[in-house]
Image (tube, rainbow, N blue to C red; front, side):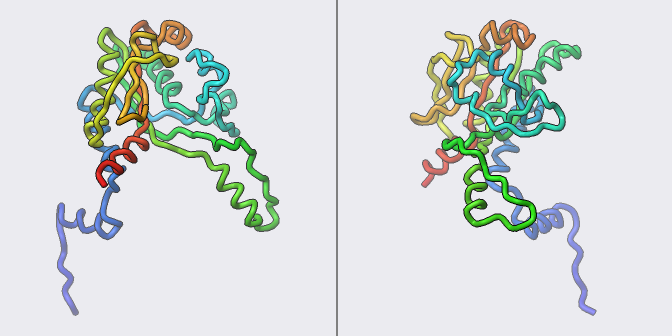
Length: 246
């Protein structure tokens, strides 16, 4: 009988990873490195449910035509009052921040890496194929067209005197890991406070915002003054860095 050598320890794990497809993808590796870096900076990763209610947009002070209000709705079995798929990570993350405060954490600092859902520009409702037969090719095409884009974002939320500067630093950390040259410039964008809000750019592309939240928002959400947040589009940033490396 032919003898098969036994691999032990790290070599065995590496062999299994290679057999399974070579380990992490570049995107997965970048996300893991970002998570480790933010954890090292004192943040706690907090995955949130991807649903939101319209009251969140009112608390944020979004205009009626703000594109973040253009949401897809589903039947949410966990909370019927939150039927909309999120277009930003901030509602869930800020709710988690408030929950931490009520449970005795005096200075929580949270982050999430997760997908948001951008409805197709057409706004057409997907078809409802019959269950007793295969959908037609046209119906399948229409169903595929109705699938929303699902870019991956990074968001952070925290409290304290210097929280707005730390929120910007979180974005810089992610950009550095992804090899992107992040530039900031002042802007006005709800729900951030004018004068304490920065656009986050790579090249000429605005990928997110960071800064201190406006007073009306923190009051509506039951958060303390000087609460700050950051959100940036990791998918777009990775795409731009891929283009720049070619």
